[in-house]
Image (cartoon, rainbow, N blue to C red):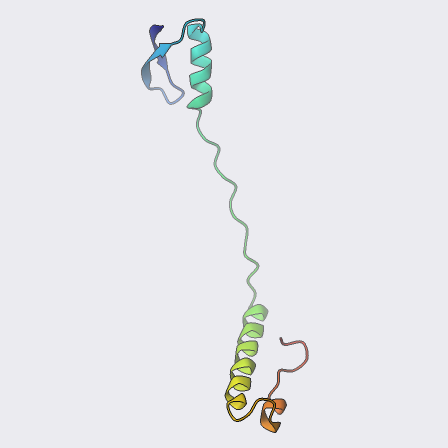
Length: 90
């Protein structure tokens, strides 16, 4: 093995051991590949938040809470059935 000084892509100088059978140019190419600057990750897109989604979730929670409260007096009683959520809410 031989020892060589090589310049890394970020400008630093490193002293490295080069295995037998590998030229300094080949070692330099391998080091450039290994220490190359990383590509930035693409930005994360929007979660698709909308005011309509928030209102729908609040309405579902309200109906669910009222349903649970009226079910305390007997599941499926008259008040409980009249408080069931409207079509398309849940």
